[in-house]
Image (cartoon, rainbow over all chains, first blue to last red; front, side, top):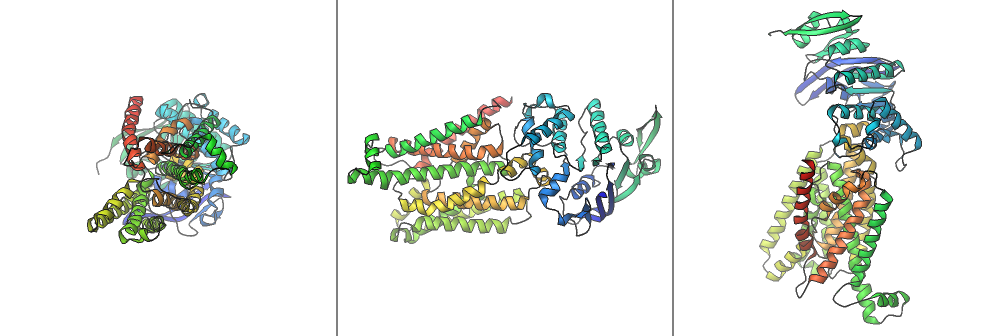
Length: 259
Length: 332
């Protein structure tokens, strides 16, 4: 069964066309990287796939069921959305914030159960933030914050995770940690779509890349087929050097093309 | 600090509110002590004591309790919903619309014909404001639009209130309107309690049910939505809940400022900044503060009675400034 199936999604904000006729599939255990230049509609597509932007009937199926047929709370138990920016409007503790991920699983008046607490502990440990569980989020550094918000999304224990630039602002070590984490989660069956700008990490960890540009999908498929010189020129207006060290592919941007 | 025992905080707030309530029954121009209270409870009190306690003090204390609860709770809900510590219950235009409704009954002379016309006018004004706000910022619109609609309704209702004052040919009516606008709990009867209580209770229920949604909104609107909350429904519940409770409060007591702004601020750190924990705490805190302010009004008044709304603003505004300066220091 496909975790996500989008058929011909178009997104417009008023007169402005963002994306046109996008088809997208995510299978069980797949890790897909969404790449493209700033403003090409990556976030809009991710929000649409999360059911946060309006779509026409039969355009988006999540876990085989049409979006309109989903009860919002049941959907929230299966799908976690990690937005950009890691915003917390109040200075709550890290533990309280991660516990928010359990909200879809709790009944209206139910208090947090022992299961909820255990799952939150697991999520804190998985993201290497258990040591500051009692600190308030306003005292964290940008990188610590990013990991706490990822823990919040993992506390949902979703079948699919849609993450918008989860490694932006992380140091190199924690970037690797998060991508390793994604890899092991997807190996365990979770479907993950992540917006990512680091093409070397994208190439190394993602099963598939979807390259957006000019309101449409420029290319999709296994990373090496997508990151061709021609596609990079068309999408990012760059030339790049690609190579491999110890079977790990890397990509270094060389120059921007005048256009 | 973060691990502050919540039951402890609630016990303190509950006991303080209870004491303030008892104080509100006891304190006033004529002394009523514990013995008199007991005689009333046992049914052996004389006519005057009964009258003072049951007809004057008790409704006043009850209204203080309910209105304070409404303002504290309303402030906490709106601050949580708008994720803005500057929000207060009057922000969405309900207070000024309720004031306008009440002022119109004074101007037209209806309130002189029967006393309940005033609160009924106020509640009607509040409900009309909600309809207008839902029209202006109805379904599928942003939080910003709700605030702008609230500002528009407030400006319009205030302008109309000024127009009424402007057109008032009789200076006594103008003075009565001015005094009413200042907000007071004096000379209220049980009829005011019965008239406003259902609206406030219904409003409280709607507001208290939004705790988990407010917690989710800590992460922003999109993340809250992705956690399964329908923001349009939540906004509608909150607007109606505020209109019913704050509208009814304004209708019986006039505009009482600063309680709804200051109390959530004061208590937020004691509930570890969690919006859902703040709701009941802020309601109790609002009740306690309103009752205390109303007691202060009675003690300080010599001759001309001070108005409750004036006193809350006089104490509230400098206090609020201090609070801002203190948080500024903490941030640096």
